[in-house]
Image 1 (cartoon, helix red, strand yellow):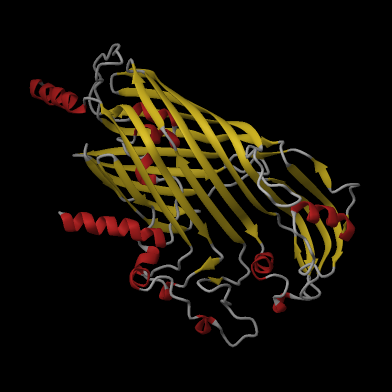
Image 2 (cartoon, helix red, strand yellow; image 1 turned 120 degrees about the vertical axis):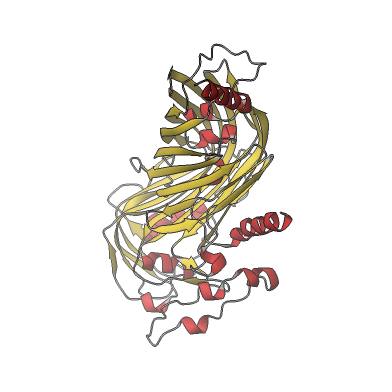
Length: 501
């Protein structure tokens, strides 16, 4: 048994160094024992938890994925990181006979995919602080959540823009080539803290059917926000230090807690405020007819009714943050001109760049700087969940997450499909998430809970076994405890009922 536990823990820890592709802690939020964490995916789901009182001390997730920078699968293995940490990549073999190398070296430990595909990147770090969930009088469920979140998203970035961003204008093979990009692309980042209050209510209960609805209202405090989006870009680099823009339409905004003159940190780190909401509904089909539950006081132990299946729908992160402190926003309308010696220019701060911009480029607008405030929108998404009970403590949940890019600027989130089979006990459980990131890339993960501690990652096979290149990382954890509902007593009642029948 010890060998099995050791092996599973080694797999989870090693997945920190594998390419993982899910940012929603699938092994945690699908568990019937998770309590308050079930509300991250659907606020109505807290009514389905095993626990009637749940206290989360801390849980969190760190996730990174991209399709540009990578370590090749033949140079990445678990043994290298155990015995020879961060071995340098032998990059000569990745050059072919062409003038432009197929996979040119972009750093000491990674390469870049220099092809014509659009480049995408997503980073998510979420730390959930002290949170709690309480069930009251059988039909009311309350939860208080606190968290700090950072998200970075780059979507549909042209390969030549990514290459110039990585190596600078000195990349000779792309000089004196005119690039025209009619398709929009964007780069966004936002950090914020949130305090949320969730409420879920059993709206309907009859025989074997239950319907619960829920919502979470969140107050947001923005630490930093930055966006850049291009609607049309026509540019070239005539020389290794020059940049020439024939036409550019788009915009940019920045609100970070630094002094834009000397780059010193500001005392006030809150640059904006906002609100967000999660809304959800959950239908449950119980295994047996429900008895009349009545009202249960807070100090008694409610029973837990095993279910046959559950179906849920939710809308997540409907909201915004309005940044109004230390803000600079620019709008580009037919921006054109040439900045000679751009790479050698003495630009030491944000204001240096903004003040120098009108001297190098002209636009149809009178001023490039248009506003001292801007609004960034949350990564809104729709989610559909289906959870089936195979009996004997085996469950499987299917999840669909779809990003909803209605408003801009915003940090976007990946869309995916996932199936999470799991085995649950009161003291321990194991889940193996299977996900299809961006509807294209399959991943297999593992999550384990032992009493109060949960560790997990949503991809183990790719980089660990050398089937995929290393393109990201993912790891999540949770430390929480609670009081379970009396599900064993209820199971005994049903067993007695079956004998009577």
